Length: 443
Image 1 (tube, rainbow, N blue to C red):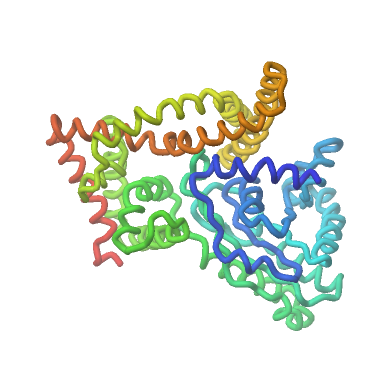
Image 2 (tube, rainbow, N blue to C red):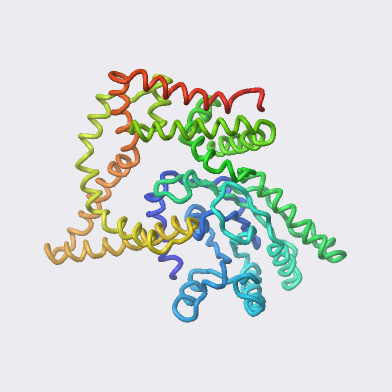
């Protein structure tokens, strides 16, 4: 019951918090069989919450760190949501690990009912664009279930999640489901040599996850890849004739750019160094000139939006934007404040911001409706208010998401008229960056 209520709250807010959302090959999970969803884990509990909303049906359960299960209300709430505690030696010591037998028993019963449980096989959450080594716990659970329940139909479905900006409001979120792994294939070998077979299954899970997870080898390139997605993602997709608006196509860019940087790091470290310097210089200039790269790119391909259109759009839709900004200011502000004050690790920031934002939005809406009912003393005002608020919200949300681009377009207009040399210098740096990526000799 609680899980259904939270899904009703989270699902609409998912469309607000994330600019674009998509799941690829989700039907591989919608099967009549027990399923382990092996999901990579860059962004705390938003990884699983958003996935449950994107998948929607069937319901998913989750395995999460057992140290979050404090005695009392918190433990009851987490259990009601469908979270199964799993204890690591580093968190709960040997006493904690002993409790895993009870957790395994809960998971086995769920799988025996052909439920779907999300497991994070990396064993920890780190916000990186790489897959961490897969731990053996998932394989042990898979074989433990098969032995305990005398079933051979358990399947492991690898799933990757990729964010455009993991810790920011307005990010894109893409889930991709990989090749199904049938545990049945390993059972006879497990009877002969359990340790080797656990290692084999763990290796195969990692292989399948790497096929669908962009993997940047060198941590020193983490900032660089964030810059390059802003500079080159749309250009790459356009030049490759991919539909930029289809989030599924964005994965082609992520695999291209991670492979490119991995190769450059090995073969041409001096080019990586120059690429970092150029991208940093470019972004400092963009910040100084109050521009964003998208408007500069549009200018280079004669796709600028036009000053008349931009000004008309900003003026005509500003009342919608301002009204929505005022109506939603409080929940968004308090959600950000909560995340700022409680999150010491960046991995938890988006999760806390999302969950508290959704809950605050509902609470403030209830207060608004109570005030309206008290003032007007008629029930009909509630559906009229909700419908009007929705009609205002849609254009306001698009306005908010395009605001930086349109402001940049206005600034670019003045640069084209009065600061042509600075603009040409900026474009030259951008061209150098793109050429460093596209140089055929580096492929």
